[in-house]
Length: 198
Length: 100
Image (cartoon, rainbow over all chains, first blue to last red; front, side, top):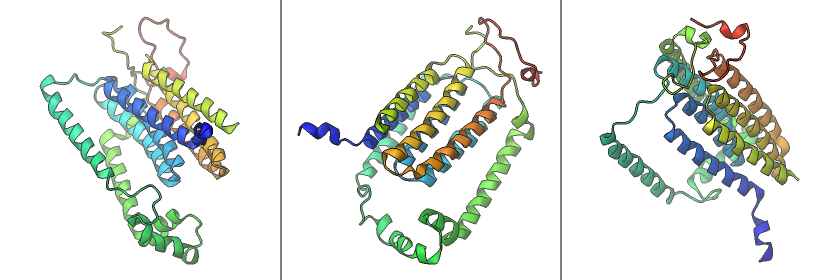
């Protein structure tokens, strides 16, 4: 009983502090009106969630989150911000309750849905029992790839991944066309401190 | 030992967060984001050692690469302008290139 506090694993404490920081960053993003600060904070949010994914052993998801969330989408949002405004418009007060209602209803529905979820690492969960079990058993014999996720993505579902790559390539082309080719090497003059403030 | 180092890294992450929240100028926030990325790399490396699987060190290295490239990409957008009211710093020759 005396050693109870020492049984808390350090990884749990790391997870707790990562989630706390995620919450703080999310609140700060909501409250800030400087769009540049919001973009930087969303990059930090992606880095934090990538670290959290690593602690959940989802290394591939963490890779994607760090590359797309912290890298590509930060740059894309900056490019978009330079084309529009640097500060968010103040909200119309009469539209606030509807938006707040929608957000809270969605959040409550999502939290309600987590009640049905199987426990973390449950061997009888649908994700682990049928197809997942087969992948775990067959992969070492079928494909000489030690990482099962890689084997599933690149071999078992190879055509699916090819289609996804095509979709992402098309989306990237569309974004480049929208933002303009020159925007990437612009070096435009920008500051998140407004003239009237100073 | 690793736990103490992890705690120190998390405190450093919190400090970087404070700078990202408060930082009045654009440059403060870019720097906070960059140093937060570095702290994430260190944290992932340490978490590998905490769980007894240092294989994650490779991942931490890749994160360092991504973080570096992202910071360069962000900075490419700006020729940094000092806000009014603060003493103007001398500009280097490169920073004036994109001005209209």
